[in-house]
Structure formats: structure tokens, C-alpha cells
Image 1 (cartoon, rainbow, N blue to C red):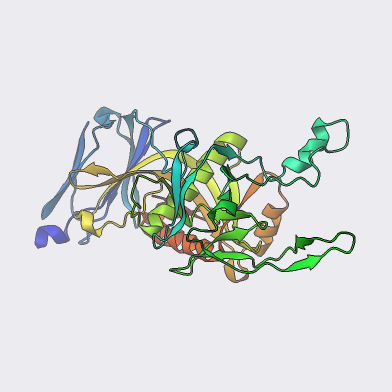
Image 2 (cartoon, rainbow, N blue to C red):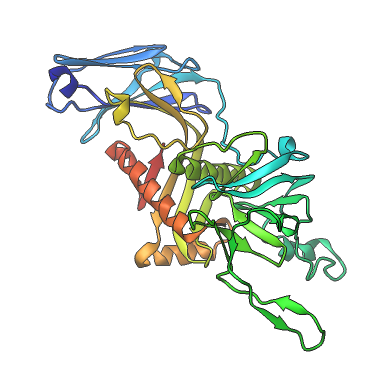
Length: 387
């Protein structure tokens, strides 16, 4: 028991693109205990008079022991030092939808929270990305004549699936005989000029899971439904429903959005807002090439919330691919002036999610921020997050 009490926290962040790593050796609980640190290409070992902590690296990662430099002591953290690495593998995002492989396949849509079938055996002939949300404003720059797309919304046909930043659009017309989510009735009104009915826009036209009552999306028209990516799982029909921890799934979807948008549009600042347009979180993406390896003496005590695919197995510790973000909460009137400033900045991209999921994401960010070494938790006025 004495050895377990003296085990040292080892935190290693590897940057693949930079081929460098930051190593933090936490202070033993006793304080003032001498440390004997051994670095090999495949492992790290920290010895104290009463215990030993060893961290074995994944096979894809190698350290250069002779490159250790920048040794310094940080109060509350322990020893910091940097070294060169070789990490020549790429992370895979948990993709909810693989456009190339799942087009032409029969797919089943599930509620991610409870596994309820939303749409069964839908054959998707076209899986297409939607243009950016401001595409209509750009048409005038490309056309010398009146906008040919005016008043022509992009609605999917029966076997289409359109993919937005945080949602998918599907046509439910052919699924009247199948189990369906609960739809809040749409208000209609009669046009005076024509003898037909039209949908009246309504903010609370929600799509609710019949089993767990979670909000899955919104109705966009009498046939088109928007499902949020954080609330559903789309699988080929021959596969079973995958059980994925909720926190892991939410972070995987958000990480995928951040990485893809930053790559495609050079956008690195994001506002996470609810379906009612209220801002909940400001996110600033710093990098997406980190690998975090950590040992607390017992892997059971490590809270893992990986943003990217599988946790890499190490002999004594845990390793996971991660994105690094800064965030600021906007709930309870916090950071309102900054939120308004970002709202007026065209370089900031908004991500819309159900309000309950925004709060859930904020809780996840807060918990993971608290698991970092103290010196890595803040940058300027922002809180940092690296998983």
C-alpha cells in the first residue's frame, strides 16, 4: 500500500506533426521525494524510494531519449521537459456516416440514447453534403442574372440523405408504415390566393424519440426531417445497434465537425448554440494531431473521454488521440460581450445542436478540463481541454 500511495502521475502529450512531446511528471503525494527518471524509446519509468511508475508507449510511438531538454519545475504540476518523438500514424474519426460506402446500402436509423429504431431498412441511393449555410448569399457573386435558386429549398427525395455540419436531412414520406419518432404537430394555414395548405414556421416543431423522449431533430416540411448527428446512429441494416458510451459519442461527433470544418474552410472558432439560437459554448480549435498518454498507477482511475476513435492499449496506462480546444461557457449570462463579438465575426462558424446536448457537452468539457495538469487548464481567459 505504501508503494501505491507514492505512485507518480505521468502525463505525455505527443504532437505528431511537430514530432515532439511534452512530458509532465507529477509531484509525489509526500512532496520533496527524489525522482529517478528513465526514458527509453518505448517506455518511461519514474522511481521513488517507495514506489515505481512505468508507462509503456503504444507501438506506433517512439521517443528520442537523448533529445530531452527544457527541464523546469512548475508548482502544482511537477517537472516539465520536452523531447523529440516519432509517431507516424494517423487518427481515425468516429464517422457516423461514410458517404462512399453507405450510399446504395440499406441503412437503419437508431436513437443513440436508447437504441430505438427510427427508420428501418432505408435504401439510400444518394448521400450528398449540403452547401455551407451561407451559400445563398454567395450566389449573387457568381450569377449575372436573378438568383435561379431563390425560394427553392434543398429537400431530399425519397432515397436521399443530405448531410449538414451537425445534422442530416431525410425524407420520411415512404416510412409511414414503419415505427416513427413522435412529431409535434405542425400548424397550418390556408393561403388566401390558392386553395391549398402550407406549413407555418414554428420554432418548437421537435422530433422526439418514442421510447426515451430525447429530442432527435426537427421537422422541416411535411416530408423532410432534420436529425441531429449527436442524437442518432446510422448503421447498415445487417449490423446490430452499437453500444457507445454517450459522452464518447457526443465528443466524437463534435471532434469530427471541428476537424472537418477547420480543414475545409480554415475555420478554427466555433459557437455551439441550441436549436433556439441561444449560444452555449465558444470553442477555439488549437490542434487535432495530439496523442495523450497518461499513467496514474491504475488505469481504472483514469477518466477516459476520447474524442477520436479507439483508445490505444498500453501496458500500464491509457493513450488516446485527441483534439485540443479552448472553450468559454455562455450560460447564465457569462461571456455575453465576447459571444456577441464572435457572433458578428464572419470567421466564426456556428454549430447547432439540441439545447440539452449543448449542456451535456459543456459538462463533458468541464470534467475533462479538470483532469488535465493544472498548468494546462487555462490559456489567457479561456479554459483549455485536451483528451
